[in-house]
Image (cartoon, rainbow, N blue to C red; front, side, top):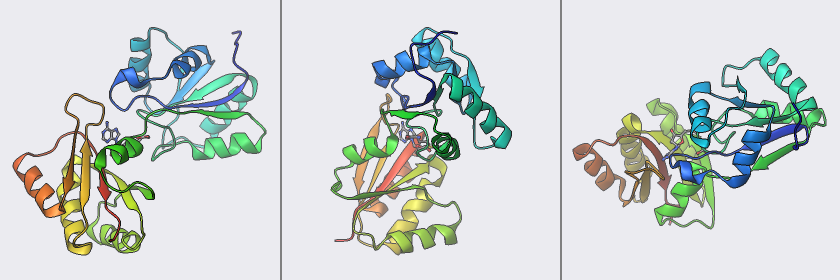
Length: 227
Ligand code: SAM
C-alpha cells in the first residue's frame, strides 16, 4: 500500500469517552497507516467503525511477547504504524514503552500525537493545586501495599493523581482518611461521558456520599498536597 506518511511509529491518543475528542490529525494518521497496534481489536474496531474506515489492526497488549514486538518493529521500519490503547494516551498506565524504546534504539522514527488523558482531564476539573502534580498510576489493591504507597508519596509537595476503579474506591478513600488525615481528595468519574462528575472534599465525606450512591465507571482519584 502507498502511504503519504513516512515509515515509523505514530503514538496516537484516542478519546476517553466522548468520541468527539479525537483530533483531526489522529483521524488522518489512523486512516493513513499500514496498521494500528491496539490493546483490544474490538475496542479499536468500534472507534474505526465510528470514524468510517477500516485500517488493519494488530493486537499489542500487556501479554505481548518479544516475537510480537519484533514483527511490529519490522513492519514500522518499512511502513507507518500507529499505536493506540483502549482509551486515552497510550503508555500512560498502558502498554508500549518497550516498543517505543526498541524503535528508538533501532533508529525508527517515533512521533506522538497528543490527545486526552484521564489524569490530565481529572486534574483540570479537581480544583486542587496544579502547579505541581505527581501521577502515580493505579493504587495497589492490597491494603499493606496501598498504605506503603500513601506513606511514600504522602510527603511529596504535589497533588497526587491515581487511577482507580469503582469497586476499590471506598477502600482507597478510607486508607487516605486514615493515613493522610486532613488531606482533601477529588474524585473525577466518567470523564467526558454523559454522567461525568467531580467531587472534591474530605475523604470521609466523599466516602459517605458514595456509600449512599455506589459509584460506577472509571475514576481518577486525586489527593491535595500537604499544607
Ligand atoms: N491511557 C489512559 C489515559 O491516558 O487516560 C489510561 C488507561 S488506564 C488502563 C485506565 C484508567 O484510566 C481507568 O481505570 C480510570 O482510572 C482512568 N480513566 C480512563 N478513562 C476515564 C474516564 N473517562 N473517566 C475517569 N477515569 C478514566
